[in-house]
Length: 182
Length: 182
DNA sequence: GTCTATATCTCGATAGAC
DNA sequence: GTCTATCGAGATATAGAC
Picture 1: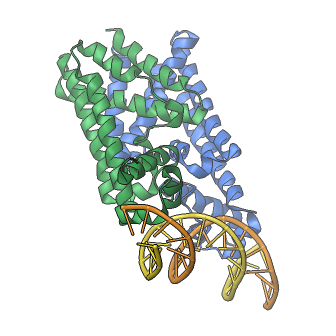
Picture 2: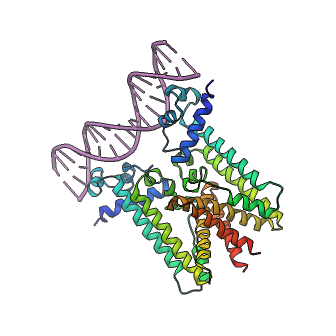
Picture 3: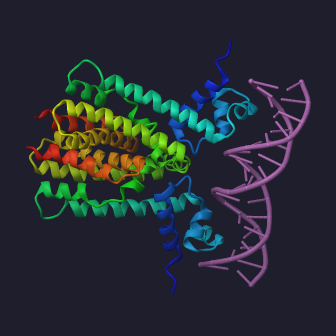
């Protein structure tokens, strides 16, 4: 039996959004990637917007679950942070979610914008909790968590710009080096 | 006398690229923003691509000059780094150059890609030089410079995602806090 | 639920008058 | 050098058969 058509469409959209963003991905491309016929897309989703919401929210849920898996383990705080920062990433491809902050289709739509904002709010909370465990004040933990997440997002930008996955690793080494010397 | 039409077109394109990127900016929008007539664009530039190259290269030159002004002054290394990191930025709008790493039009064009890559290569060299002044090895200076630039790029992503300019400031505070405690 | 055909719109680019 | 008019292509979305 074929996989659920709706799920197939969401998966194809997720892939294409990771490659080119939402605005630049056409319904036709989603159909070709998924192998589904043209009418089917508009049977399952009233418009490109609803497909985008389904696909982006799926990507956000998956990414948050992965971050929580790294940051909530049994190990000590420092190890969990390192696990999150050093997790293997396809850095040259860029961040599936971070890239949406410069996607015109996403930024013009309140729901999609809120999905992206919610992802980063929750991620910052999660990382901040780990720094508070180390005895930092709320404010300092917040600043350091923002720096940690910025290192990853900036690492993606630099790796993609230079087409060199080592930029991400260098940014993380530079940050962990500063964290480690205390 | 009216300002040079070619320059007017480049300026309008720079503004629009900062707002929506290159792919999503249409020649029509450039005309409307600049107040120039339709035929004029294609008189001065053979295609959208050549206009994009002129506008992006202008933006890159300006941004590099600003970074050099912060990083090459007379002050001590630490102050110059802080000046670069804390320079007032329109963080919610995002980085004019960093955002191009997820712009399909830019990434599909070798010249535009190289312009973006060259910007970050030169910026990383500039920041790395300042860290080497502080006695760091080449490798450590490189890692720390990559982290510093990633903080700014990630700060842009987080500020834009949350529509809150304090995310950039928090990321910089977090990073400078770690740098400062030595 | 899925298909093919097609309507409508806007894009990037060109034509040709002035 | 600048204007208006317009072309051909491809985007989003709809119609209607099966």
